[in-house]
Image (tube, rainbow, N blue to C red; front, side, top):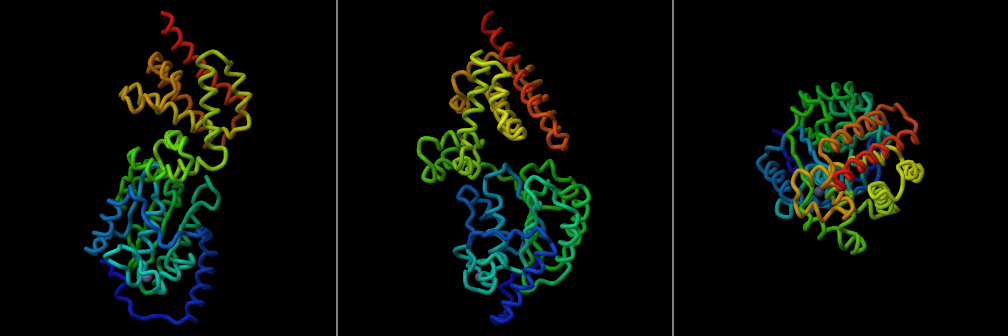
Length: 375
Ligand SMILES: [Zn+2]
């Protein structure tokens, strides 16, 4: 079992502190994917993840923290913050068991405060939405094979784990099978089914859920304009951080416009081709993701007809969803999935054709639903 860095007694002077900083920068370059952006210190897990945090603390106290953890759950619920809190706690040379916080003044904490701990690395795609490359994982394996500079743990966060292609994932397997020294690998996944089974099975999996609406609202409301917190949360499918992100810029406005476009087609106010023209300024993938999100809510509504879900839909959509045949709705979703796969595979389909096809399919659904209404 890894021993806790509390056992480390040698303190370094400021000269070696600077040396460590320099070494850290060199290491970062060689790995090429260390997150040098600022991180909160100390990182505090979000309130809805407190029970998960407690579980990690208990494992830590019992010296039963595994070498590899996978935090899996919807995007925007605070998985990264939880991982960072754990990393900072594990790396601290004298963490407080009572407050469950890093001490804030040991060498490790000083290094973490300036995002320069030599034994802490974050691996993520070099460009958003791109893959984590095998070279990054190879560099990581080299890094892990060396002993830690502070004499305690070495902590690595990999996010998102599903961004590792097969080669990169295979390269990581060795590090997962034969962890060197006191290593803690934290994989973060937004879609755990996208992570190779051989990787998943070698990690202790933590399925993290979005908070209940009430708890999410309690956190979100003070941070955004009161009147739209509920809308934001609804569009973010309950993920509070995703909802907060929507609050900045024109994201919410955009969602409302997309929703209005769908409603205009249902009520016959505008044609699918008109709406396709209006949507040309949006990213294709963004539109497809949004349509899938909405379709998902419609299916949930049909399956459960719960009051909570009814509240989330506008009267036009409520009317539509009670009339449309589930079979047609599923067929529509299948087609949207195909469009999404085309976009993700880099096929780069013509945007206008893609939007027109998607919206004409929606138009057919609306026609089918309206027919039910007439009969
Ligand atoms: Zn400390």
